[in-house]
Image (cartoon, rainbow, N blue to C red; front, side):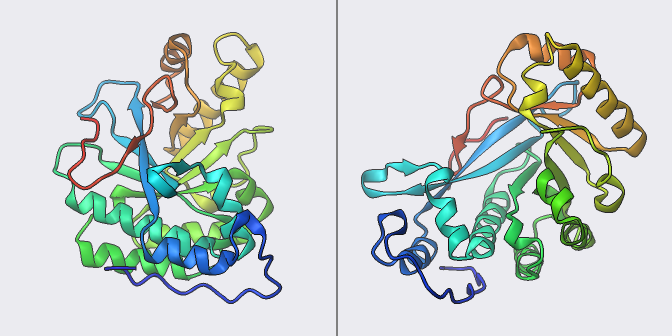
Length: 273
């Protein structure tokens, strides 16, 4: 990949040549990364209280470019990366390109960008090593980059998730637990991971305006996070009534199609002010 030393992926045996319709999926995945056939988007995150930036954060999203610039959503190609155990290589590509974007972006725009981390990368040292080197080369302040770990991984793979979180924080980046309270509210991972933010899952957020159960869950999250100094981001916000309810409950940030649509990250492009 031009300009980036993305670590090679491990070899995979017994490959399925028909996966995703590619004759040689492994070779195709390597070509996708080497020839930059992926496209990055970002979805701005709204601050629900007054501050210097209306959108202080944004989540980075990835799409795969096909013929004639048509784009495939993650659900169509991420399973192929997972099958061939190339998720860490993909994560490195996304992190590298995001850091390049932050370095090139003019000051005064979005302060912090978050990148989703795959389960495969949690116990693979290549991602943290790559991130540290890329930040050092670029001069980008590490705190401008957040790593999002899915709550399922924090519960089912607690030790690798905690180790990864500690390593990420040791190089100055921030940590987000994504999909929090998707099934039940559990604060067990907070002590070990010490995240900077929790992203409360849409399963709670969508019901916040008319469900007493959802409101109780959110109030419990707000209380614990206030004591622990953890920021709260509500996901999947689509209605003004939900925005108003979240602000009333002292939730700090909101993200979703009702806040802002994902927009392409391109050289010389425009990001929210």
